[in-house]
Structure formats: C-alpha cells, structure tokens
Length: 201
Length: 201
Ligand SMILES: [Zn+2]
Ligand SMILES: [Zn+2]
Image (cartoon, rainbow over all chains, first blue to last red; front, side, top):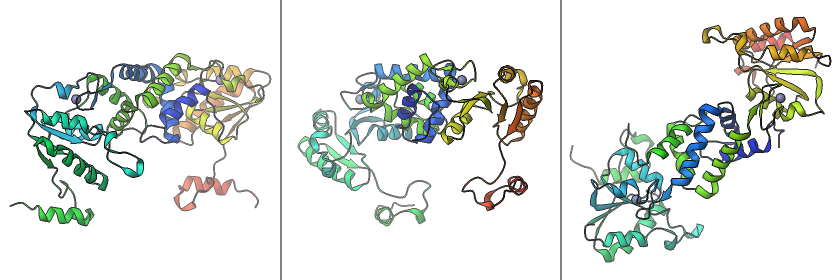
C-alpha cells in the first residue's frame, strides 16, 4: 500500500468509485479528486442524483427493467405493440435496443443466462413471469434478443421450451454482418450465417 | 438524441457521471446501470460516501489541500519537517508526491498556474499565503514542484520573485530521464537536461 494523502472518508469514496466499470484504482482517485475540488458544481449534484436514484429506482414488477416508476415507463407506454415481447438478458441490452429505436414493443429482462458452472439455474431467471405474460391473449410473438454466446443460446433453447405451452411464436435476432462491419474482422460462424441468410440485392 | 429507456432522474445521474474524468457518455451509462442494478451493494454506499464527503470535505486553510479536517492531516502531522514547504500546482500533484513517499515536509497548493490567456493572474493563486508561511522563522526552503511546462515555469519564476523578500532558499525539482524511461521516447529538452545534470556512475 502506498501512502495516502486523504482521510478515511475520502479513501472510502475512492474505493467505491473504483468499483464502477471503466474506472480502475488510479482513475477512481482522479475522479474522487475531480469531485472533491468541484464540490458545488459536481460533488453535491451527483450526491443528490444518487440519493434520488436510491430512493426512487425500482425493478419493474412486469418486465424487470429498472426505472423510477413501477411498472416502468416502457410497460406503461400505451403506444407500444402489446402483441410482442422482446426478451433480453440484462437491462443493458434493453437500453441498447431502446437506443437503436428498432423496438416498438415491450421487453422482458431475464436477469442473466443459465450457467450451471456458476450455479445459475432456471429458477434464478425471470422465466416464470415471462411464461405468465406470454399466456395473455394479446401476445402473439416473443423475440429472443439474447446474446449470440453459448450461454445465451442455451438459455434461448430453455426459454423456447418453457414457452411451448403458450402457443406464441418464438423468434430470434438474425445473424449476419454488422452494419459497417468489415468481413476481415468477423469470425467464421458469423460469415457462414451471413451467407446462409443472404437476401436479394 | 437517441431514445432513452430511463426516466429523467436516471438521465440526470448519467449526465453527471459523464462529467467524471475517465468516463464518457457511453461508459457513464454503463456505470449508471451498474449502480442501479446494485442498489444495496454499490449505489447506496457510494451515495452515502458522497454525502459524507460533501459534508466534511474542506480546503485546508493553511496549504489548500482538500481533507475532512482543517488544517489537513498533513499540516497537523507533527512528524513532518517544518523547515521545508513543497509548492504544487494542484491537489492531484500533492497526492502524487504523497504516493511516491519522497516528501516528508508539508505542501502549499497554488491552485493552478499563471495564465494571462485564461485570465488567471497572481491574485487567483495562493501566493500571498505562501509568502506569509515562508516568513515563519522555521521555514528555510521552498521546493517548487510545479510542472515542467511553460506555464508551470512562468509561475515558478513569479513565485520565486515573490519569495525573494523572505530570504528562504528556493529550489526546483531536478530534470532528467524518468526512472524506467526509454531515451527513444524522451523529448530533446529532457535529454539535454539529463546530460547537463549528469552524475558520477
Ligand atoms: Zn417494465
Ligand atoms: Zn494543509
């Protein structure tokens, strides 16, 4: 341990900031100093924003999104297509799809993937609530927008089985070349999928 | 603007996190999500740490360090050499020197450099308080640990002039090759300084 010029309260702030993705121990110290030397302009507003987030943020009881209201703004949005549910692994995937603007339906956040090695079984994911939602008469399609990883695909198969009793159509995202992607940098599996699913030009 | 899946309170949290050094808009969103999905383990403790920092952090009235007590822990530390004052531009430099363990004296934080272009004159820096401190009988040396930039050196000259009336010895950090530094990557000025200040092997 190197010597520290800061008291225990500041050390604790640095340690907690270092737990944020994108900040290591060194950049956490820089971030803390940035905050401490901008008390009025940044530290106080950020402290307030975190306290408000603490008080108001909750997991949506319908789709497991995080928001400041329950059900979340997306589940409340009457303009969304109620016939489709887009299933994602994590809230970060939901946010990414929302940013893309490609989804006008609602979501269901599984809360991870099946992972026997990590001791994560079906009961640890929000699968039961998905089946319940898919039972509703207006739902006709569930899109599995899970990652194209082994764990994602294993989970997709399990979810598909669980949904079989509901009679909804289960679809998955298309594989292919990312927009702007260079073929050179793509793996063989993606290239093969892109060839198989080729479309007329 | 892309669509956002989050309410205004969460958007505000993201915007404030994006002001931290090391976090851009994209990583601020990831950091916010990381916090929101770890409410008990991270968001609440960090919120508390920031509130405590807000309440307790103050600028040391002696040296302008930031700490949770005034005078700061370094100024209070009776084991430190009272005959030397190490002058730095910013608190980050003070922390860096403390981590190095090379300083057993106290500091004086100028709060920046002279910069006519940015409208920063001598009255905007903590120079008057430095001169006052240097007047004290026990102080015999002021080490100017400012950056080896044009602005840092301009500031160093100004501070040296201001200290001339006090009779203390004014020194500066040695120039040379950084430990572990490769000559190939060093600029000519550093190399020339390292040659000039060469020592017996
Ligand atoms: Zn929801
Ligand atoms: Zn101090």
